[in-house]
Length: 345
Length: 269
Image (cartoon, rainbow over all chains, first blue to last red; front, side, top):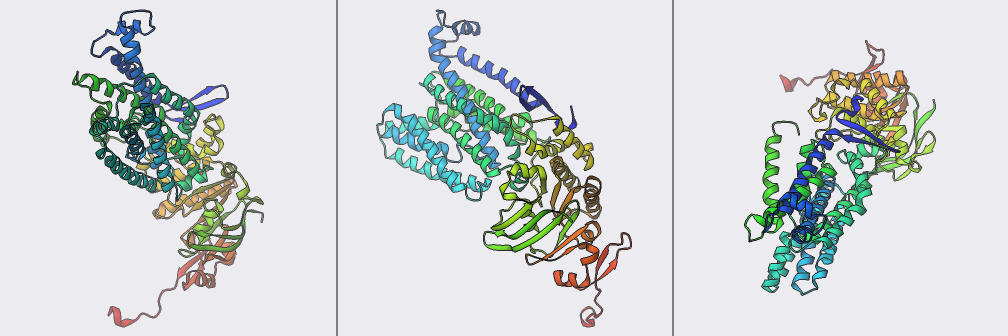
């Protein structure tokens, strides 16, 4: 162990040599345990409580009395919560690293608003239900393209990119409101619930779309996990190191946008996860920028818990997960900020 | 003199103006070149263009005779390191981590660390004397320490050429001397080629083997300080009346502005 690798371990596997932060490994391990517990709780709790052991027995589907509830009702929704949370976490982490701004997340820079406008139009014009998600995906990507085009002059500089995003988001939100107010009230309400974001009535299909997106992006994410180390350097310093900072930033943003837009298209605007998960992960790991894997895990935990609480807190009334993510994430981020003042974070 | 870094008919500048207009310059290998000149004379623009941080409008920068624009940027980064004027300090990054970032040109995402990386980082930290503060966050360090850390990062790049943009500005005199001594050691003990933009003419004259004096985007004179640094040059380049005397400590030419002999008595009296 040389002094240059303080807090890091060299891991070799064949021709691959990676440098991992030991604290990241510990945090990721702990988060995995927390996530497993949250998933189990989500499978146990519902209109009817099922003991953990019974849940585990029902998972293989060998004809126990709980098979249907666990495997068909709770498992798909919980898996969806995990992958959506992970996608939001990763997307937020990438976008925040580029913007060097913890406030820049897909729900601030217009992606969510683009998806929201498209979904609202689809929901209020009587389009087929199957068209809502594709429309939302297209809307989110289109909004991101506009933001990128506006922000890409001067090499996607952080401030310009965030400002362009905020402006686009505001414009899209007001358009959404116009559409909603001029629509039939019932449709308007459906759009409203979509905008808040909920996992109710969604399952394997939606989870598959998000999971496949993450799987396709995985090689890029592995690259980004390493390449992001230069994202905290200014452009001149990075160029001096043989890095092409603008190309890298564009790669990060496009990847983050794809992950976040797909997740948003499937479950709506589950607010705040993409914003708070990377920041929580960054502080847990004590790194200078959001770590991708830990941000994904925090996001997953957050969405699973939000969905679980939304289902049970005021049962039988069900709260959309999006309401709870903000309620959970906000105070926790505040707690970390207050605590962070006392030590170097 | 063998030129390691040269420019040919170099035209460079920013969006609205041309700063360097057709510059031909040869910088000797294995020597310490100091670029001096008044504010806005184009010295930083020249350094940034040499370091390919700024793309020339036309003309060529030659690195060992080959056009830099034709070389992959990673390869250039293994031969030429640059320390920009005021680099952004990443929040919470430790000294060792930042120095290790100098190894970027040798790494890939599947090849993130090697024994030569470890060796280069260790040596760079020892040379710049920052190994004692390896685990301190860079943003908690003093200006002088920070500058040594940045230099260590460029040293970890293990390049023949080191370009420094005003490495001593904003430092107190003791830290300025410390940085310049370090640069001098790099040149004399390691045989590195160093090119630095310096603000202080006397420091440049004392430490540099080769002096490039610029004004208005053009090179007015270039050569060893003892040969080219004259009263006429200082008046020509800086518009300053001065004496040039041998420095009592180093023997290098020392520029001393003339003391006003005629004081208008009415004002102070």
